[in-house]
Amino acid sequence: MPKQRRKFVVLIVAFTIVTFGWITIGTGADEVPYVSISHLLSEGHTMVQENFRLGGYVEEGSIVYADDHLTVEFTMLQEDARLKVRFTGLAPDMFKDDAEVIVEGRLQGDLFVANNLMTKCASRYEVDLTEPGIEAHMEI
Image (tube, rainbow, N blue to C red):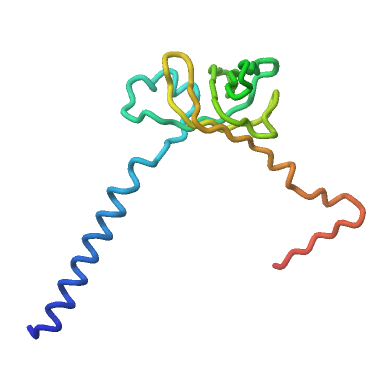
């Protein structure tokens, strides 16, 4: 095999190994599985994964802010399951009673300590096509 071709093959093999290693090793630690509250409460203590993502609704009247106004505790509902959540940080503007929320964090006993709190409000960005002056343009 000519010397230039050998260098090219070695370069391609090295690039392939580095790329494969980067893809397989670098992404596993950042994955946060989405689980239900009932599954987390029944199986969470036995799972290897430490961080989880949950979705549900804020129970009405359950929001309690700490004196520093940065820590908030509330109860999250999902179907018949409920879970107490604590989040420290700036809560989103749309965070309120009955808001749909997504939290990421870990279970500590019966308390879910969230390091991320997001609200879902797709209706805020939807257009009401029944309003006068609004026209729908759609290409098919």
